Length: 564
Ligand SMILES: *[C@@H]1O[C@H](CO)[C@@H](O)[C@H](O)[C@H]1NC(C)=O
Ligand SMILES: *[C@@H]1O[C@H](CO)[C@@H](O)[C@H](O)[C@H]1NC(C)=O
Ligand SMILES: *[C@@H]1O[C@H](CO)[C@@H](O)[C@H](O)[C@H]1NC(C)=O
Ligand SMILES: *[C@@H]1O[C@H](CO)[C@@H](O)[C@H](O)[C@H]1NC(C)=O
Ligand SMILES: *[C@@H]1O[C@H](CO)[C@@H](O)[C@H](O)[C@H]1NC(C)=O
Image 1: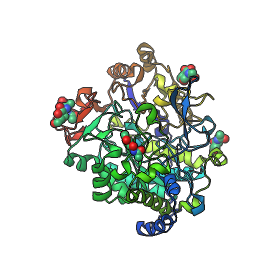
Image 2: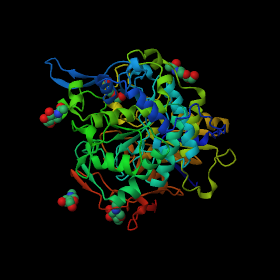
Image 3: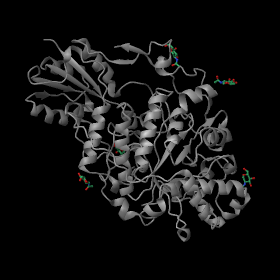
Image 4: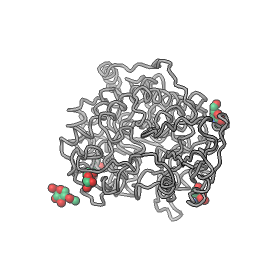
């Protein structure tokens, strides 16, 4: 018997087979941002009434506490219950609301277990990149903006738009640009426009050249201007041109200086050359200099001196006394930018609540059948069919009586925080097959496993499904003999703060695929020939971008793409 094998990576197969209904209603913006000029005029009139303490409120976050062990030794940090991941104090006297900012890449972050199931777990941003569709990304961003607004938030800590450099990068799944600056530019603009059309601030990140997790707090990415401008900056320029409210500076150093205290990156490039008029906030605890305002930073996030624990360096601003030591020019400059970005988005009238009084908003269920259907159709759109040998797809009853669904990933459950709180168990860092790990992780509720989804859909078509949901080669070959078509469900995950150890799929499934493919007619797939055809994370603290523009498919000497 001729065996036909379809390899689909990840858990998205069920949506590929369940034909996705396309949603074609026009996007009607709920909110139109003011012009920057109008926003600055309004900001000026509020700034004129501000005392130093009011200004301080805007320059640093609140809501995180230092966690002590029983000997009162600081051991980490805790976010207060029912606060957002990023918060500033409201200045009620002047009608300035709090900033209520939340992560981001997989949807509204389910920071506490009582949020699980109340938000949509979206396809990864890299999957969205694979739709190649600004219109689809904008539709996603509008829905995301609505969920954030429904949760009482007024800003989303996205889009993340690094153009990949390191193939094993732990956060690559979060990056909307994929490997391409032009694609990244188009999609970044769509994301910003979509989110902000719901009156929610978008925050482009991470500025700049933040390409690996290995040594991310310490390494210096050393890049020449041509490479930076042609390969890595275009998505940021596009986000700025689309009116992004804020930019987040990154953990790493750029050409020897920490990104968040790097006047060339913050002042000369972002604010002057790129014409950015919003504000720059630090990545969480990425601040490294107490004179950062003068160097171009505008806001210290999350504003608690965790650097006392990790770096023994002082925070940007902790008291009005310290504030008084900064130059009035740089203080007012930063406050003016933050105010303008907030007023431009109308936050003074739209903000729902200020922590700690946001619990009722945070508890709201903002997902819906409509959003789930959109997530599903975006996931389907993101699937790239490289080759349909012999017109195998779509499967139908006339050619296919039995499908063998093979692979452990076919029955993978979503990670369940189990009531213990995500901080208790580190698994959130690694994520699962439904949502990548780290700050962008959203716990997926109500998962339909690939096997279950395929069973349901196949039943409608009168096709039988047999399955050994394991990666055992002998079992797989035996099942394959009894089937007309073999579907291998294979997966991997990754997360923030660590790069991937290699490019393999989990549990030896690459070998399983090879064994099955050898037993029958191949389906051809494209993949990097070897790890050495990619840029690996460097363990050096000085990372020289000597390859210039020649990453990924731009590497002319590479055998990068081969027929497997
Ligand atoms: C900034 O830090 C330096 C040492 O790192 C210290 O001498 C100085 O007093 C600090 N300035 C403020 C305003 O805290
Ligand atoms: C939230 O609403 C969705 C759609 O209406 C529903 O499927 C889901 O079960 C709800 N979540 C919770 C936690 O009640
Ligand atoms: C952490 O999560 C893993 C994977 O879900 C689980 O096996 C383990 O028991 C959990 N540990 C704790 C302390 O909850
Ligand atoms: C990076 O470049 C600098 C300056 O040219 C050089 O001193 C250093 O050795 C290089 N580092 C590595 C790891 O190649
Ligand atoms: C380009 O391809 C060559 C040959 O495969 C490889 O040695 C080199 O590391 C690649 N360069 C980059 C930047 O990926």
